[in-house]
Image (cartoon, rainbow, N blue to C red):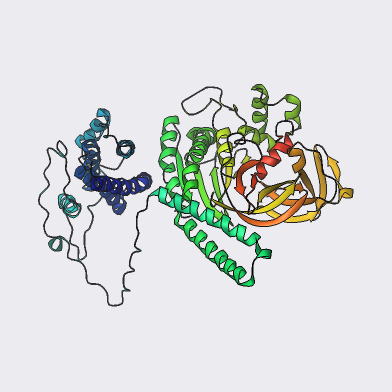
Amino acid sequence: MSSSDDDIRADFLAEAGEIVEQLAGQLIALERAPQDGALLNAVFRAFHTIKGGAGFLMLVPLVEVCHAAEDVLNAVRNGRRAFDAAVMDAVLHAVDAVQTMMAEVQAGAAPSAAEPALLAALHALLEAPRAAAAVAAPVAGGGGTTISDDEFEALLDQLHGKQGAPGAAAGRAAPAAPPIAAIAPPPPVPAAAPPAKPEAETVRVETYKLDQLMNLVGELVLVRNRLKALKGELSEAAMRSVGELDAITRTLQGTVSQVRMQPIGKVFARFPKLARDIARQLGKQVEVVLEGEETELDKNLVEALADPLVHMVRNSVDHGVEMPEARVAAGKPATGRLWLRASQQGDRIRIDIRDDGAGIDAERVRAKAIEKGLIDAESAAMLPAADCLQLIFLPGFSTKDQVSDLSGRGVGMDVVMSRIKRLGGSVELDSQAGAGTTLRILVPLTLAVLAALIVRCNGRRFALPLAPVSDVFVLDERELRRDGRWDVVPARGAPLRLVHLDRWLGADAEAGLRHVVVAQVGDERYGIVVREVVGREEVVVKPLGASLRGLAGLSGATVMPDGRIALILDLAGLVAAARAPAEGTARG
């Protein structure tokens, strides 16, 4: 295949991919408002556009499934049948088939033929008797001039190109489209109408080029840091140049970061369909509400969050939302609601997944954890209800008594927790019996560069994420007291639990002055005890080596201005290690 063919195929996959991302959400919205003619036409045009590109590339199976779905939607448009559950199910299955075929094309293979059952189901919908409820044919222009369904489709073919493939679209010949002006003469534009805003020009760039650019900016940051560390050895003129380099580097870093940003809506868009599919499989009814889809974060995070969010949505529908009859008996609507909300908080992104289901019974979680041998009865009895809820993140935990395709194998929430921690984030859970459950994720905006507080302990330097840090003070040993397993000191009128970094390192406490770095971890404040606070630094995050990867309390590494390596600490991991010191010790 020539390079030009490769470029055409890449452009098709990119454009069709964007269309499909929106298609499932549009269909869910159409199910709620089947009389929305504009939305119906948007869905119809989506399949039509994909069919046109697939026909040009001779992707016959893709043309066939799009054409079959298009026929069904056209029948709905001209009132021959209603947009009912049967249409919704069949067209959603067609979306699944389109996604599968596009993934095969992306991998360089020919698309597999659609399942005969899917094509048969789509064709059968055309043979059903005329539905009582109908959607009016769309209006193409002003002055009451309308366009027929066949004319509308022929016009689309004229605009997009009639890209039928051999064997596709057999048995139906659309009439030639009349001139556009004759079909729908445009209404006069009012004199006071503002000029149309020009669309921003865009250029498609391969992902690897963005990654390479970000890596080069990261190396530039390291060089900048080294030059700043030499300020005592440079002339005044050289220092001015370093200052200019610093400003330019910051601007470049910010610009490149913005280029890599993507709206989280790219991930959120798949969940209305996912929740609907799971709910129908379980005999439940669920409505998904999306908020903050425009919130942007680094593209790598968008991709990395997809699987953990799938686990959470699946669990919310399976474990959280009750059966319709149970909800009605409890005085709730038969249809459960699931909210996905994203927002930016400083240099972090917060994602809430909330349902209005039955909530989580802390005592049942406690009993199940003991039954499965994940915690001993004595330790479990000491846990308050809020801490019992956190046991669901333990590997092997499940409250399901029977294994199903959806749950019961004890795999899920522990995977979510471990993946979010690898991203430098945290997961919190809150639940109220009868009212529902909220899972809250906090992740950094970007994985590439981190604002950090450099600290020293036992002769080593470490980088603490700066965002959750609220205070630093000198530790007064006379104020230390013991509360259970924790050392506690008063701070701003409230007791502050201490996490000793030297104990995490498995080393003896250093004599002399020590400092406490106060940081927010989840809903609580903790004090990280270190020997010395060196200062603030922007560090370039590097992945850990195999020997350190997965160790509680570490999230990455960075190169300091003097060329030495410093480990980047994970605050949530440090706190978890302090809760179970025998399991969380890091040595080396």
